[in-house]
Length: 298
Image (cartoon, rainbow, N blue to C red; front, top):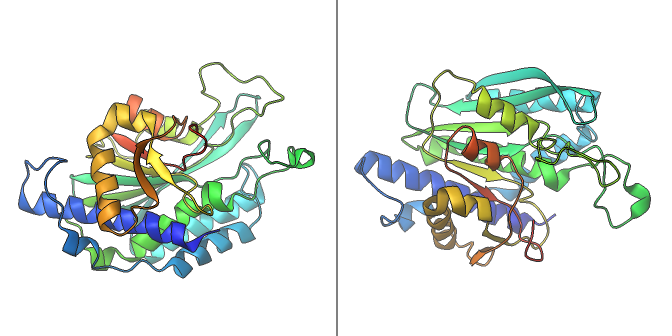
């Protein structure tokens, strides 16, 4: 796992928070094409080792497959870490029936910075493990659960480190860190799942239909998925461009100013069935997906 990938992703996240803070404080009519304050973007240092330690801690529980003891204990750990950083934590615990008939004890974890503010942005990821390693190059491991150091734990590690830096970042908007459950429970290749893709992204779909606060609204959202892989490169993702093009362009510009331009390529990539889909299509919150670009498709 590349610490440089974490540095680039989190430099981007800090930059995104700074942009929101500057625009909100200075001009309520600011747009995505307004100038970015590059001096502020580089003023906070993200500690890669700190993020890596939280990733390791999550993996130490074992694969966090829904309904497992590892899943329960890791959920407790994530909620406790956000609380220790002074954020207000809300948990959505609900039983959802999966494509295979299993009832999953799902748990969305929401950590709010300055919950009293109505002007908010979202930083989110999924935190659980896929039950089947059906994409592993070693076919003998396809029915084993995934440890999910990258595809799950890395996004949480990024968010916890950014949350730790909030006192220094001092954004003037509210921030909601959302850890979605059961994103990765989609049918493996040897089974037939629903045609509409509803076997994926169960936690975010539930949240989009039932936000943790009545009347909840956010200016925009940024989804992190698999942001800790070795030599990861991030391109413009298709669903993100469809619903939140201005946020994509503004975020990639911030990444360049934060010194992460070689990781965030200013070119179109693939399309991802990910948690940002229900956030855009159900909740109506413009949300982008930061996900690695692989062979023109994700």
